[in-house]
Image (cartoon, rainbow, N blue to C red; front, top):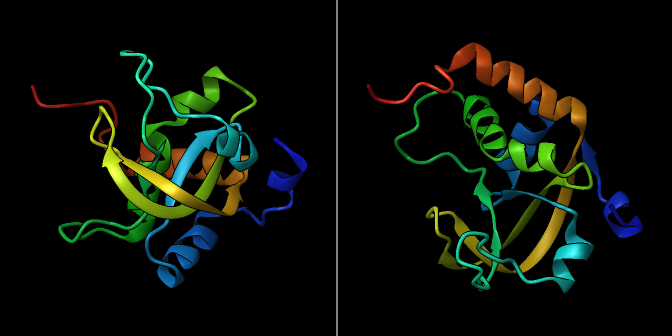
Length: 143
């Protein structure tokens, strides 16, 4: 994490993130080495080796069909790519907004012209995982 990334406001709870998403629609989360790193590096699809036209992100706004609490959506979204942080301790979870330019290989939004908004603390990510495990049938797909 660079000094510029360290200067971003850090959110410490799901309640804080929920409030931010409620005030500022169009936010996404990204696990990477931070905004400064991503500004200078292209995103690469690891399987094909192709350069992506934007940064791969996960949306934080719930879809219209979502009828559960927004905090449940947020916990699920934060846990979907947490393995990226676990594989590389240099990665942080940060919130951003930008212009969607395409979809990635997993149909995730790819953003250009990104603006960093906040960093997510380890405590918030731990809280999200506890909530996800308690409220979802995590890891169980259709039989």
